[in-house]
Every structure is written in structure tokens, then in C-alpha cells.
Image (cartoon, rainbow, N blue to C red):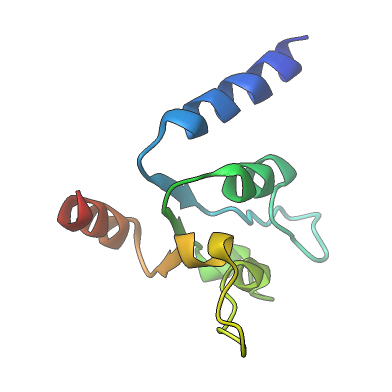
Length: 102
């Protein structure tokens, strides 16, 4: 029951957020052959109705699996959700961008 409550609380927090800062959505453990984006984090990114600022440490995501959240515009442009996601090189860069935007 606690696991369910934590998930619902996270979605409520995302609902009220003006910005969502995501740090290392892919976190490679020693036993991971091909690390991927954590399921809960993936759902929060897709659920967010606000700008999503993402920082991914390359050593935890050598295959760059987090890149699936950043697609190049196609003939019809980007889907509305894709325009919310921005990638940053450091946590500091995220906070600077939020401060500038806010």
C-alpha cells in the first residue's frame, strides 16, 4: 500500500509543478546490462504538463537511452509533449534555466 501511495503522491506533486527537474532518469547499477529510464520517472515525465528539464550523467547511460525524450521535429513539427522536454549538461544549468524562465 505504501508503494501505491508514494506513486500517487508523486503524480500530485507533478500536477502542481511549474517545472519538473529530472536528475539521472537512467541510473546504471553494476548488474545492469542495458540500463533504461526508470519506469516511475518515465511516467512522471510523460504526465507532466509543464516544462521538463532533464540532466543525465553519461556514465550512468552510456547508450544514451534518455535521448528518446528529445526528438528532432519532423514534417509536422514536434508533438506537444515533446516541446516540454529540454536536456541540460549539469544540474546547475537546470537551476539557472529555471531561474531565468521563472
